[in-house]
Amino acid sequence: MSFCSFFGGEVFQNHFEPGIYVCAKCGYELFSSRSKYAHSSPWPAFTETIHADSVAKRPEFNRPEALKVSCGRCGNGLGHEFLNDGPKRGQSRFIFSSSLKFIPKGKETSASQGH
Image (cartoon, rainbow, N blue to C red; front, side, top):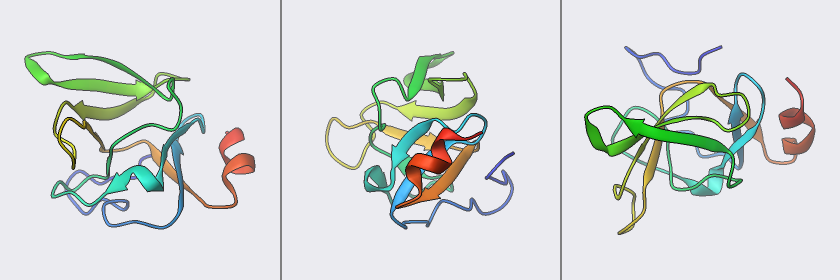
C-alpha cells in the first residue's frame, strides 16, 4: 500500500492535520504531525521520530549526507534522512516517498496497534 505517486502529487505533502504517521505495513508509530513541516520537495518532511526506535538507519551508498531509513519494527523501506538539512540549524530532515499512513488525533492508540 503506497501513499505516494512518484510522478504525481504526494498526498501528505501539504497535509497538516493533528495526528501521527505510522508505517503502512505494520502500523508502528513513526512521526507526529507536530514534527512535520512545509518543504519544497514533493514528499512529507519531519524533524524527529516519535520513539527512539521508530526507524532504523543505514548509510546511503555514495551520499554521505543521506541515510536510508526503514521502519524500526518491520524493516519496511520508508525514505531518507538528510543530515543537517532541517528547518533549524543542526536538524536533520526525514523525507518519505511512500509507506506512510496517517492516523488522526484521538485515534492513534487503537489504529496504530492494528495491522
